[in-house]
Image (cartoon, rainbow, N blue to C red; front, side, top):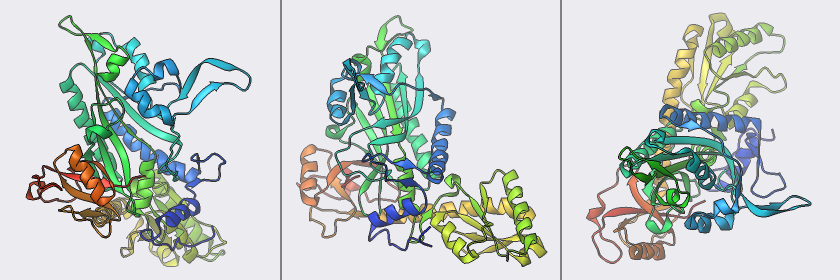
Amino acid sequence: MSKKAIGIDKFTDFDDWYQDVLREADIVDIRYPVKGMIVWRPYGLKALRLTQRILMDLLEKTGHQEAYFPTLIPESVFSKEKDFLEGFGGESFVVEGTGTKKFNERYYLRPTSETVMYYMWNLWIKGRKDLPLKMYQVVNVFRYETKMTHPILRVREIMGFIEAHTAHATPEEAEIQIKEALSIYKEFFDRLQLAYYIIKTPPWDTFAGAEYNYDFITAMPDGKGLELGSVINLGQRFAKAFDIKFMDTDGQVKYVYQTCYGVSERVLGAVIATHGDEKGLFFPPEIAPIQVVIVPIAKPEEKHIFEYAGRVKQLLEREGIRVYLDDDLEHNPGWKYYYWEMKGVPTRLEIGPREVEQKTVTIARRDGAPKKTVKLEELASTLREIWVEINKFLKQRAIEQLRKLSIIATNCTPVENTRGLIIAPWDGSREEAEELEKTFGKSVLGEIVEAPFELPPPSNYTTCSGKKAEKWALLGVTY
């Protein structure tokens, strides 16, 4: 490693900070010769897999079953839903043949899986007993992004897309599923200690083929918005396009009602950007590839200290804690402190002659709180208590960051410093949205339905044209 710490303020130079963190902390390597497609290094992939595991467990607990559907989608299947084709056709990769043979039909590399999944659902769903159907898969999807790519945040191969799809007998059941999906995502993002807005997108900017959708939005340190995930009510449009019907208990054949929701690896990019600082990464303990690093403070000949550190490592491993013993003799303890802080390890154990003599360890925290010396028998429980405190610290800091990156504009006067997201009074109409966009130079992302801090009632204010506001609009430039 070339540096002890990143040493860059992410709020003044986010791009350099972010690139340095990904490189120095061994998260990804962007040198692969296809733009927008990145290589995940083991340390970064471990953090991603731990993150994904949280969401997969939440889906499993709420009755979703994991499945897998193919990557290639025949054009005849992909084009069954007209709005979907228009929405995704222009950014989809197409396979027309092999090196020597041209196919009779073009195949799309999945940009998302509605069409391939629903083709099969037409064959599977026959009666009321088949509903509700709740499935998810973890796959790579491909989109030829026309915007500038950014590692993890905007890529052309999304390699960790967790997409869930459901089918229901009634619109009321689909609405209940939307609420469940929102609660799943809220718990997921809360466990990552992220701060976010939940917005309902306007009708003119809704997911292709959908009735409406909700988005979870946060802000990056440069003030740009980032969509963390979407929850979408598809209604019956795909059901009618793919002829997904069932025989109801009243003897009538009916179309199903559908929902879908997806999260990609960009959520880990949000974690990195939100919680990191000038020292480097700061992983929440639940997804830290290494939760505890042990640093012996000893000379090479003081083998009893290294042996004691090894016993501490075994003790923690028996407790199911992810631990690493840094017994490298090349670097001194001070260098190691900086290095593991840069890697985002939330807790460090320091073991020197005093700790060995007293059968204790000294715990140092990534959040800079005072060190604590504890007895071995109290170590595991104390670490878990400290992790709860670290989570509270990370969440509160994330909320304050989002608050600082959000500007509440209570009238239509242009804001001088528009770096960040804009919150403005709105009546929900497209005309007022266009006025807001003209005034602030940012897109209306949607109506805020939940915020991480209290907002005043929008009815206290008027819109650009003097109408009484009914809601808060969230505006921003997004990745």
